[in-house]
Image 1 (spheres, rainbow over the protein chains, first blue to last red):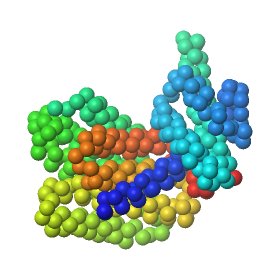
Image 2 (cartoon, rainbow over the protein chains, first blue to last red):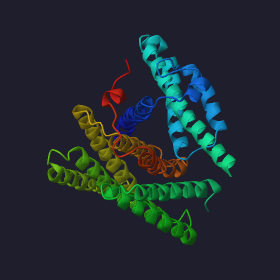
Image 3 (tube, each protein chain N blue to C red):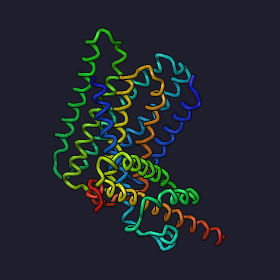
Image 4 (cartoon, each protein chain N blue to C red):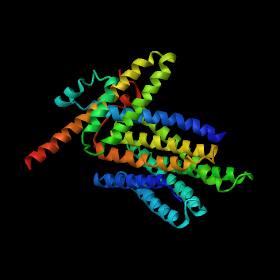
Length: 134
Length: 231
């Protein structure tokens, strides 16, 4: 009985902590202004980012060399994005008003992915510049 | 005998802890986060010792069983010191650090005592069941303490990005562990837990490494963006 209660409460707190942690990662990336190259590749800004861009951005990210440390960030954001997808399906009928919030969150995920892509593009250019100088 | 999945998990956890420790030391964050350094050192020491237990006694042995669960309980207690460090940082300007530490230690001692009493007075359960019970209860108290700390952060609008992310990653870890131990108590014969609990140990060092590596000390975050939907 106690174990079942602890399991139920822990599941709820896990969900809340994970959502807040993911949102803290996304909020930190919102302050980053995309470079011209990245904005051109992504085709959106912080205000116009939408969830539908996320999959394509993940594919582009996987094509770029990793500067180190941001793969964990993108995995957490991708997991949060999937969680939002599940929430969108589950809440569609119960709370139609939540759809707007979920779409805004998915857009935030897409922007966070764009920031990671931006960093990787900059890193790739730096590597290329170094190799050219040699 | 261990299967390749056990070995892979052991290697991943060990490397994550080592990498996290290196990140902490390279960022010169050890003076402010000494409890984090101690916890990671304890984790690395436990991993090395568990490897020797596995080699000499085997995965199915009582020696390894006792070592694994009791070392996890000790690590949980070390984790309380990390939590106290986070409390001290949040309350650094209010001067109530000593009261908080005393309260947390009382809570920790009380939880271990109550867990032992509950198991010792149940004649139909083995005393060895105490380790799974105490693990579940210690982590659950950790969940409550982290939740209370998160409540304070939300209330005072704490905006240090590093601190916010450290508290939230701690919340994810203790919730995951408390839930995992509760599942072990509910379904003790299921083999899935052999993989699940060790695998959850990757989260904390990995998230700490990310925070210390990528988030500058002076970075600030609008707490409202984490708490409420973006308008």
